[in-house]
Amino acid sequence: MRALVVCGIVCFAAGLAVAGLPGLRDFLPQLLAGAVVTIEITIGGCAVAVAAALVAAMAKMYGPAPLRWLAVAYIELFRGTSALVQLFWLFYVLPHFGVLLEPMTVGIVALGLNVGAYGAEVVRGAVNAVPRGQWEATVALNMTRAQALRRVILPQAFVAMIPPWGNLFIELLKATALVSLITISDLAFRAQQLNQITFETVKIFTIVLLIYLAISSVITVGMRALEERAARGIGRGRA
Amino acid sequence: MTESPAPETSQPMVRFERVTKRYGSLVVLDELDLDIARNEKVAIIGPSGSGKTTVLRMLMTLEKIDGGVIHVDGEPLTHMERNGQLVRANESHLRRMRGKIGMVFQHFNLFPHMTSLGNCIEAPMRVLGLSRREAEDRARELLEMVGLRDKMGHYPSQMSGGQQQRVAIARALAMRPKVMLFDEVTSALDPELVGEVLNVIRRLGEEHDLTMLMVTHQMGFAREFADRVCFFYEGKIAEQGAPAELLGNPKEERTRQFLSAVLEAS
Figure 1 (cartoon, each protein chain N blue to C red):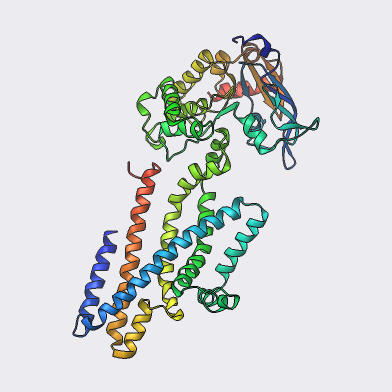
Figure 2 (cartoon, one colour):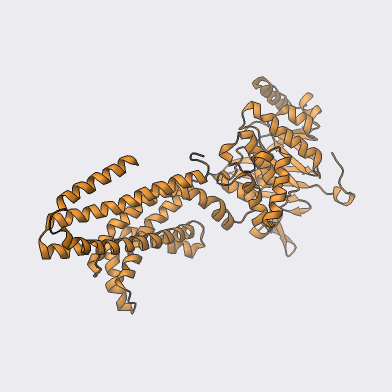
């Protein structure tokens, strides 16, 4: 954890040394504006991903047959095809069926559903990893399956889910660069644009790299903290 | 054995009727017949793989039945009547019947993310619909009975195995079952912690109207506590009777062999 923070600071300082030359002031505001869009899509996408993953995993594991098939179809479709094509499909193909969505909405939904498909398997794995005795205790206490899941199984599975979710969130952050291809002025889009105007290639893309790194570091540190807290809540961490 | 009110005593509390359980081609219970009277304390002993734990698991509806019927409190448990015929119980029938039965497991199976008190009020609140206040009052009383008044805010990971098992007993009792099942509840405990759990069970038997079935390797406890001991062998009851009789003077060769093997081990 400390090593990570130190590493981040060093990288940032080095980056600023390269970029901290005249001209920085001219394009930093633009890049930061792009970063805000990237962060918005990341947060929105993560929320969609978690929701989609939970629903899909529960449907696949406990739903009646039609729901189960639907969940499997969703997971396989979104895992098995390119995120870029999914993005294009929602953006360029849906309007042919009369569904016109805002670019931001498409970006958030497409990336969220894509990552959610992977997340569904994370949820399923974590739920299956809860000892069978916990289920048996809920039966002996005459709880319904829904009560067992909500109150006993998912809270315990949650702890095991956090590290893989951290990975997925970072994947999602990096995938947000794709939305620059559907007219959204995210960080990657702004960088391209600035580069074409100023030709300050080295500075611009170094700074952009560092901004992505900074955002993903926040995710990593946040998830680590969440994990520690959750482990303590379940009585496994330091008391 | 304490006597219950007259009209109820005629009927056994638990009745296994030609109950069969298979895992693939392996027959775990072979047309088992077993009646357990109201408030009777029955100890089940036998070598591993003899089907003794399966008896409890089937009664708790943790295993599906392959043949026969189990009755609890005068009603079919594994089946229900529909148009004068017995059909397999559906979930709502199971839920109604399961409420009469409580179980304590070898590995406690406490909920690790809840305190002792939390473990004991969860199901009473959500399943029985008690208010938090009622549930907590009941849980406090029970935790006090098992001697854990000062551990109510502790998480399972902060307690010894013996303490955890006593919480598990309180948790099961909080649902007010008529039948309590104890599945090798001291087998996972360090030897010095066995006594505290057995003491709680002993007190339960003395102070509460409960039908109790326990699978156990504690022959001394079975002898002193049980009204009857059943020796299981290959999915059947090979011998049963009063503890002093069965443990002191077994008639069957298999019982004798088993008992001497257990004695040697301890």
